[in-house]
Length: 116
Length: 108
Image (cartoon, rainbow over all chains, first blue to last red; front, side, top):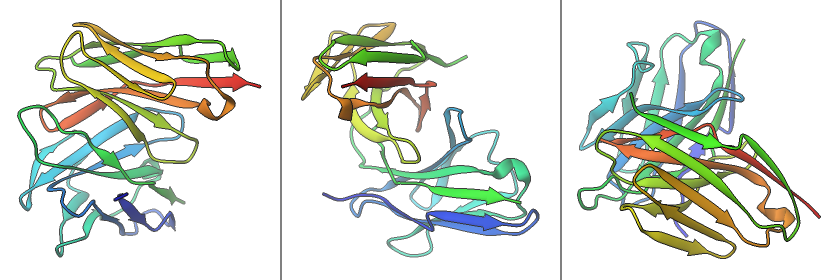
């Protein structure tokens, strides 16, 4: 069964460093998303991406964040200068274009980001 | 403001003891209600999508129902492997908004 994959599973970085989190969405999906979950809290939406541009972003997704689809299979989230409060699980998701309703999003296993 | 509220926060059941989890929501322009299962340290695993009031879906011991203001996840004769956090989420524009989840624990 097709699934979303993410690498690395765990990333440790120093405050102020740049990190890139990588995702391979399900192959025939065209919508891509990033969410994050701080330990013990809700899953929070960061950004949605379609047709090589951002569809929607949350207040969390400020100028230090960026997304890119560098090739036909990968989808990346870059954090330019990490802060302690960026420590969280980051989930990538993808969905199949459908009708008018929001399509079901399928999530990857996550990358645990630890900022020291 | 869009809101998703799940209750109870935690639920402990004996194996075989059926129960229901609640998800109440207020969202403008609902575009789907989703149930996911999340195990510790893992990503949300898709269970169900419901689009309109009155809709029901079933999978093994789980059944999800939807009204105009809330959704229920019924679990029938649960087993220890059903222990997990169950997340409710609503679709809004191009994103989904999650509730805090219900931590379900099934004792053998």
